[in-house]
Amino acid sequence: MQSATALDSSPSTTNRGEDDPDRADARGPMPKLPRARQRWTVRRKAAVIEAVRGGWLRIEDACRVYRLSVDEFLAWERDIDRFGIHGLRSTRYQIYRDTEVQRR
Image 1 (tube, rainbow, N blue to C red):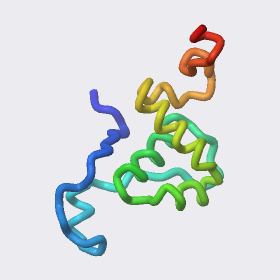
Image 2 (cartoon, helix red, strand yellow; image 1 turned 30 degrees about the vertical axis):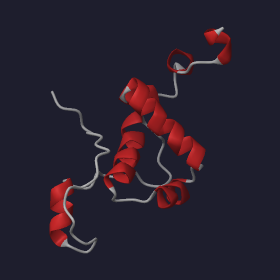
Image 3 (cartoon, rainbow, N blue to C red; image 1 turned 90 degrees about the vertical axis):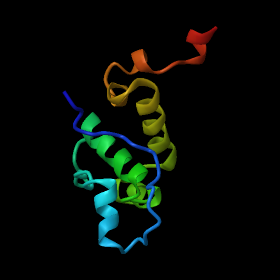
């Protein structure tokens, strides 16, 4: 079974311009982004990460539209890279995050 959001951070292999209509086809379809005031779910967070990594949305624009800090967005990226999509859950926070106390 395939995941609903495939996260690919590899850059596009084509050298076409930003306005080229074939460029979007090379990257695949743009992920469906959540509305600005929707409740965050792991799938919605993953869609925003995918859009930024895929080049459809700049990180600055994503942070402005969704009222995120750059640090929060980067934490989402770190969590999805370390733990997969389930690392984006806000519940059971302590299972997925390392703290200094646990490392000692």
